Amino acid sequence: MPQTELPPFFSRTTDGDLLIEQVSANELVERFGTPSYVYSRAALESAFNALTAAFGDRAHRICYAVKANSNIGILSVLARLGAGFDIVSYGELARVRAAGGDPAQTVFSGVGKSAAEIRGALAVGIGCLNVESEAELRRIADIAGEMQQKAPISLRVNPDVDARTHPYISTGLKDNKFGVAIDEALALYEWAHAHPALEIIGIDCHIGSQLTDVSPFRDAAKRVINLAHQLAERGIKIQHLDLGGGLGIRYTDETPPTAADWIDAIRSVVDADPLTRELPIWIEPGRFIAGPAGVLLTRVEYLKPGEHKSFAIVDAAMNDLMRPALYGSEMAIVPAGRGAGERHAGTWEIVGPICETGDFLGHDRSLELAEGDLLAVLAAGAYGFSMASNYNSRPRAAEVLVDGRDCHEIRRREPLDSLWALEQLPPPD
Image (tube, rainbow, N blue to C red; front, side, top):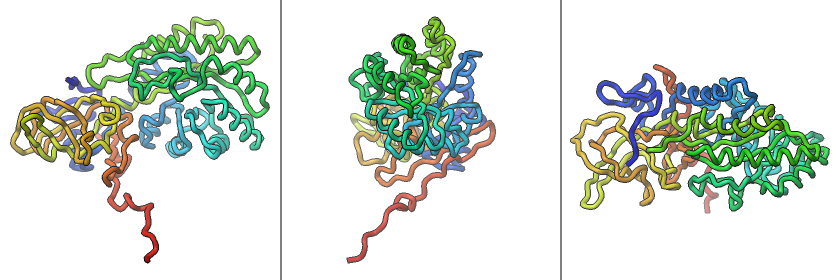
């Protein structure tokens, strides 16, 4: 059964209603409706600052993984703290720039960069292209040559380290589509070193997401450093080590490492080696920063008791929060505000209105509920809204940033006519 302990910067009023910083869930839904994603600015800043503090005066760069939550309001908060960014599309790069982020502090990852994306990234001064195949490396070289530029590149190497996480979010095994096999990387680095349109600036790896043990990070770092030594023997110098992201958070009963645990584990390997102890360490956290900072607020529309299963039908659905349906993820769901209806204690399936049996937010939740209650799905700040869709022609939720007593709508709820704004009727017969 998922735990219901509230994350930092979330608490309860004397009446038991949920507080996000100093604003109650009831107040938020009166203004912005349901379903809504609500984020704590203090939580975002606290997570980023914990990573910064863990590095101390050690040279580093924290590149927030934009895919976790790409709202420009969130990106703006992090840019003001000095964050770099990790992107996987030109659309994400455009968001970073719109939020005030610096392309020169941004790394462009992803296995399928188009020629247009590569040209666009080079044109705005991208900090590093993380290359994931020989074919991509050759394409970047050709494009950079045509543009009369030197493309800053790093090979994303696949260290074949088992992150021991969900198979859909494991990225560091030889069976995964990501990166270049580490035993093939040396030849590609030698080719890139000889090419006049390429500038080698680093080595990159990323082994997966939602890791709750630091040992895979240490294993990956050791293999990356071994490659750095092979490069140095051939006169190829690198300027940084990018060791990716993937640190887990608490959804139910996990006890993930702290920021200090993670950075200490990486540094215990990198700083122990004379070749790498002075190299800047880059990391790419996403979920660790955004996940605990957000909740999804939803209202109970109907209670439907049954002989075998009892259903609480809420107004949020799998199109709003895909993780439970896609990954079978368990996320804590807690009371956020009391409705006026008759209360019923029981074990409930928390389900949405979409026409799919897979449309659920949680199974077997012991709650006392009434129609009209507010519920909060905790730790929904990462891979919540960023994976949302308009399935069943449902407008996507509002997004709200709470800052102490203030709250800012950082994305309006979609109006109905936006659903077909890019569509048109065919000519009449």
